[in-house]
Amino acid sequence: TAPSYLVGLVGAGVGPSLTPPLHEREAAATGRRLIYRTIDIAELDLPPESVADLVPAARRLGFNGLNITHPCKQLVLPVLDGLTSDAAAIGAVNTVVFDGGSAIGHNTDGSGFARSLERGLPHAPRERVVLLGAGGAGAAVAHALLESGVRTLVVADLDTGRAAELAERVGRRFRDARCEPAGADDPERLLAGADGLVHATPVGMAHHPGTPVPRELLRPPLWVADVVYRPLRTELLDDAESRGCATLDGGAMAVFQAADAFQLFTGTPPDRERMLAHFHDL
Ligand code: NAD
Image 1 (tube, rainbow, N blue to C red):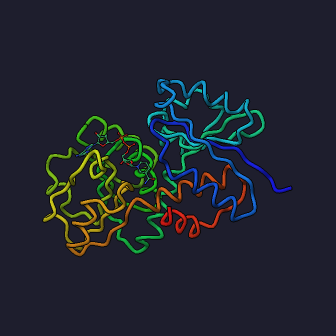
Image 2: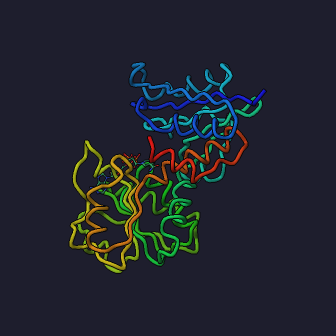
Image 3: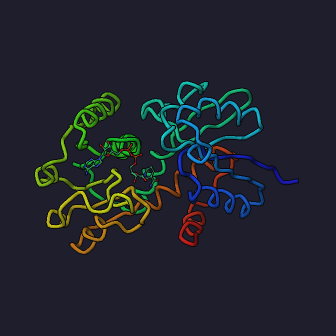
């Protein structure tokens, strides 16, 4: 019989996530049986710290692995037996693989973003890139950007302490690059001389409408990538596109983080383009 897998997603408000059908459809397409369950701590009325109980419980119940999302990506660290070097450097885990007796933490948000950038904006100049948002997604993206050859990364956040901390952390890992912290109150200065802008704050989501950068500051050759994927077309991307900038939405990052997790859970490389097509069907 075909191999079978049991995996899940732990986080708050994960009910509507598209990750479960993405995994299940890709498994079916490759002749595997995979069941993907959501474990919604908000619905279960559990605190974020309960991830420390849920991970060992899932292992005992025979799960092959878990995806971990907001607000548990850092809280899960203490209950893991090991981390990949990326997950350790990013300081957050979105994928846990149960392998033999141990639970190993990975971060596929960073690898998913890197792949999405490579696919969507392969020739984008990367001399100076501004990252807006130094939270969980921002941390994964910062490492991916430096890994992909960005020479100067400006890390900006409303919370300047957070920007400084992330810039310091990635600067220590990528010693050949320049990592500069910045505030977010002067977008004109922030974008002066930048080749690209990567947006990693919640602005542009349904419950955070708006755009973080005035439209008139967006002009070619600046390229603009958004990690927000609900909606896929944010006001920022609409503005950038209407001004003639090359753009990249957050959809492929969301799909490719799932694709990389699928490979870790099943040991089989997925068809990433098929997963992307599934995502656009869903
Ligand atoms: P977070 O709360 O960890 O971090 C958000 C950061 O943005 C905070 O540091 C906050 O201070 C900062 N911020 C908020 N408004 C700002 C503004 N106007 N200007 C500058 N900084 C501002 O959130 P997160 O988990 O990093 O998620 C951010 C977004 O990324 C969400 O929309 C999430 O859905 C998306 N995301 C997408 C993917 C994907 O696969 N495409 C993966 C993870 C997260």
